[in-house]
Amino acid sequence: MRLLLATNHPVIDAMILKLEDEAGIIELERSLKHDGLAKWAKPILIVDEIKYRERLIEKGKASRPDVLVLYDKLPGTIEMEILLEEIRLEVKNEESKDTRIIFITSLEQGSPLLRKAVELGVWDIIAGTDVRPIDIIKRIYEPGNYSDAARFKLAPEAGNQIKRAPVISEIKERVVEKEIEKLVIREVKEVKRQRIITWWSASGGEGKTTLAASQAYQLAKTTGEKVALLDFKEANPACNYWFNIIAKDSLEIINAIEKGCLNQNILEENIVTYTKAPNLKIFTGVDLYRINAWGAEYFDLLQSTLKYPYIIIDTNAGLFFSGTVSALQGADTISVVVEPTYKSIEETLRWIDFIHDKWGVPKEYFKIYFNKLSFRTLDEDTLKKGFSQYHIGGCYKYSDSVIEALNKGNPVVKGFENLTDGIVFSENSMKKTNNILSFLKR
Ligand SMILES: Nc1ncnc2c1ncn2[C@@H]1O[C@H](COP(=O)(O)OP(=O)(O)OP(=O)(O)O)[C@@H](O)[C@H]1O
Ligand SMILES: [Mg+2]
Image (cartoon, rainbow, N blue to C red; front, side, top):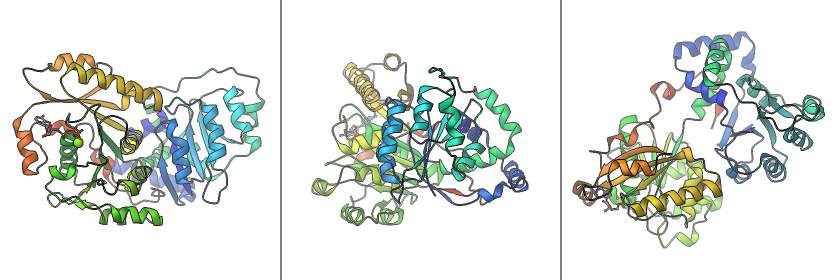
């Protein structure tokens, strides 16, 4: 069964955070068996995850899921009612049948949106403020029917009142009580262990590639896990210079995509392995002479084909290339490089507003890095004030040694160590369990 996730539900997130103890997992596994819940250990393939509404239709059409888990508070600017209609019209499974929607909501029965959902044939509605992951898992396997959903339509009109989801502390208490749910969600976490970090700036030359290369290299070294650095800078990709490697022709990847057979193995064979950190793979980009054969949607395909825990993407400055658009829309963190000038501050703020307003990318996805500071430039405090509503990732001085490293073909490390802060998955979340719950796979 193919499953598409479009949820940032707080219950799931909070439970994922809570799961830390391997011994606890084994015990929970026993209780799952004891309660006869092991019957759910049938394979589910999580085909993709959507982080905001604007991406849903496109990703749904590409991944052809049987079931879509959709949360009504998924970030984005498209009205949920319109989105539901579009899903109904456009998103089908591999047999061209309607994708079944499991709709998680805290709206009241009879609210206009839920009435509409039922009319559209959305009969798997999980409502209330105490949604349990086990309810979601059950619904994946056991579809609801009209009589399950009728109360949401037939109840007296409830207005558009939205109840707040429970606060994290309440959720944590419930986690302690409901061990079985922990178990199931633990596996969801394994599946969701992927970060896609895009490096972007409003103007050229601010330091995107320098920082992206450094971050990818340091992640590979410190975690030992698979890291991919994808150069999405169109026409003039340049990541190879930071690693002293020869750029690889993208022709084989283009051929595989055209034949419809691109998979992780083929992709790995056709990107560069960095010998100093063999778990770091580098897609050196699409050369000027290949750009005509390279479809805009190929950038999305590269991202979704690599099931790596860490994907770092380098882009063009500005918003005028399809590689940049793909990287910005696919990322869960957009690392923005800013030079210490008023020009850079103003341009960057304007562009971020645009990306947020037009595409619905949440502002909390942006992380700001100041680069090339010296005693003649704007100082750190002034820069931080300009971006007071954003996360600040780091602040780096102008240094000749950065240019020296580039000429030697080395990613910079010294002075840039904090590029991996807050990014590395915790040790416990990295452990692969081989238990009966390993039924959710990407
Ligand atoms: N902290 C720094 N100190 C000194 N030089 C730096 C620093 N960061 C980057 N540079 C230099 O600035 C130049 C531009 O950096 P880089 O290529 O990383 O920018 P970019 O944003 O990727 O540019 P483009 O938009 O062209 O892709 C390079 O020569 C790089 O070595
Ligand atoms: Mg660059």
